Image (cartoon, rainbow, N blue to C red; front, side, top):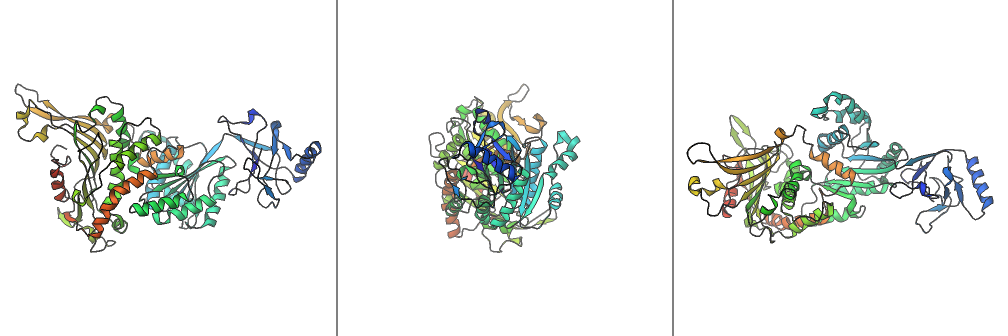
Length: 598
C-alpha cells in the first residue's frame, strides 16, 4: 500500500488500499482513499501500537482491516523519502501529516476539469463554451465536472459567466428548462487570470482545480484556444504545474499546425517534450461535421456504394468550399496563411482521405487513421501547373460596393496571398489511379457551401444518348454530399417524364436532413469535445497524418512564395477566377456547383 500526495494538490493525501480483493475497483485497480482529519496524537498512538506488534513494520491499519504502508508525507514534511521497488515514494514518519482520521472512500468516482486556455477569445466565446453547454444540456457531460477559463485578461468568475451567457443557446426540443439548465451550467464555470508562460500562474490554477475535484480521481482536459506561437509555453506550464496525478491529462490543439513541414515538425517536437502522442488531440472541426462523419457510414454500410467506389465507375471527385464573405477584419491573421493553408491542407484534405481510404479492419481510431495515412502517402506531389490561385477585388452590385481583399486595413496593399485556390490531386494506388480529385476553396464567392460531389462515368453504349443530345454530362449520375449549410445527401438520376412521348429528365433521390430528422444537428465542436473527454481519437489528427499532409503541400507553397506568383483577380461575389474552369476542363471535368441544376 502506498500513500500519494499530489504535488498540485498538497492539501490532500491519497491511499491505495491493497489488503483484500474487495478493495479493488471494477477495473481491477486499487481503490483511491482520501484521508481526512484526526489529531496527531491519535496518529502517533496508532503508529506506536503497530510498532510494538512488529518493530520492523511501518503499518497503519485502515478502516475495513486493510493495511497502509510506505507513506508519503504531505507538503512541508522534511522526512527523507525512499523509493521502493514499485516506484512509489515511501516515508518513515507521519509526524508532519495532518488530519488522519475518518476515511472518505471515493471508490470509482471521478471528475473532469475542462480548462479553456484563451477563454476571452472569439473561438471560446462563440464555439467552445456554447458546445460545452450543449453537451451539459443534453446530459452528455459527467456528473462531476468543472469548467475553468484561463487567459491574460483580468476577470472575475461572475464576469466570465456574464460573457459566456450571451452566447449560450438551448436545443429546440427542450426549451422549457433552458433558463434553469443555463444557471446550473454557469455555476460550474470559473475563471483564473494568468500568463500563458507562467509556471506560477498555472500552479495557482492547479490548486483551484484540486479544490473542485475534492479528492476524486481527477481527469483534466486543456483546450488551447490561443495562437500557435504560444502553444508550447502553455503546454509546458500546464503539464508541469496543473496536470492530473490520479487520472488522465489531455490537450486539444487548434489549427494551424504550423505553416509548412518544418514548422509543423518543430511544433510536434515541442509538444512531445511534455506530452505523449495519445495526450495530444489535434482538432479539425470539419471532421466533426455530421455529414463528414456519415461519409464512412454511407460507404461501408450500404452495399450499393462500396462496389462503385473506385476508378472503374467514378470519373472525378470534387471537394468544394466557398464562403460568401471576405476576411472582414481578420486579414492580418489570414494574410499570414492564405486559403491553401487555412482550408485545403487541412479541412478538404482530411475529407479526401476519409473518402478515399480502404476499408479499415475496425472502427478503432488507430485503424481508421492508419488507412487515412496510406491515402495521403499515395498522393502525387502537387505541381504549380495543377493549381490556380486567385484574390478577390472590390465590386459594386445592386448599388452596394464590396471591398477588395487589400482594402482590408490589416492587409498589406501589395499582398499576393490567395483568397481562392483550385487544385487537381491524384492518388497513385490501384483503387484511384487516374481519377482527378478536384479541390476548390475561396472567400467572397457567390454562395456559402461545403460539399463533396462524386461524378460517375458515362453509361457505355447508352441507348438514350440521342435524348440527351451532345452534352453527355447532362446524363451523368452524381452523388452530392452537402456538408453545410442545409445538410443533405442526394443522388442525381435519369428518369422518364410522365406522358406518351419519350422525354427524359434528371431528378434527385434526396435525403434532406431537415425534412427527415426533427432533431437539430449538433455543432462539430460538441462532437469533438465529447470525443476528447471520452478518449475517442478517430476524428483527431495523428502526427504522421500531419506530416504526410504537409509533405504534399509544402513544396507547392514554397514555389508560390519564391516565384511570387500573382493571383488571378475575381470580383467580390462572383464564381471565382476563370482559370479554375480551364483547370477542370484540362481533365475533362465541369465543376458540379456551377450548373443550373446544382
